[in-house]
Length: 195
Image (cartoon, rainbow, N blue to C red; front, side, top):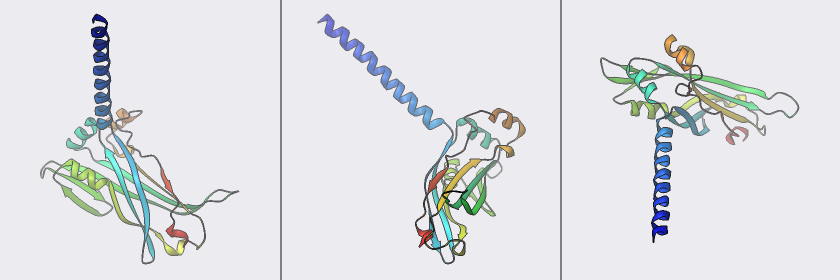
C-alpha cells in the first residue's frame, strides 16, 4: 500500500510539473513578438496581377507598451517574382516594397494604420493588428511582364524597419528577440503566371 502511495505521489508531482511547463510554454509563445506569413497568392485583375496574403502578427508586452507611448512602427512588405535559371542567376521579373506604419494617437485614443497613402483608424490595438496582418489587392505585376510557359517563383517577406525606431530603442533592439519582427521568407510557384 505504501508503495502505491509513493508511486502515485511521484506520478502526481510529474503530472503537475508537465502541466505547469505546458502552460508556461504556451504563455511565453503567445507573449513573444513575431510575424508569420500563413499564405499568399496572386490573382489576375484585368492587365495586372494582385497579391493577397494573410499573416499572424504578435507583439510582446514591451512592443505594445512602446506603441501606447507614441512609438511609431514602420513595416516593410517586400515582394519579388523571379524566373529561375538552371545555370545562371535567376531572372528578376519584379520587386516591390510596400510601407505600412502603425501608431497610436493619444488625443483621439485611436490606433492608426497607414498603408501607402491610405490611413485607417481603430479603437483597439487588436483591430489594428488584424488589419496589419491582412494584405489585399496589392497590384504587383503587369501581365505583359510574364511569358506563357515560363516557370516563376514568388517570394514575400514582412519586417519591422528598425532604422525608423527611436535611437534609444534601436540600441535595445540590437540582438533582441522582442524587436526582431521579421517573417521567414514565404516562397511559392504561382500557377496563374504561366498560363
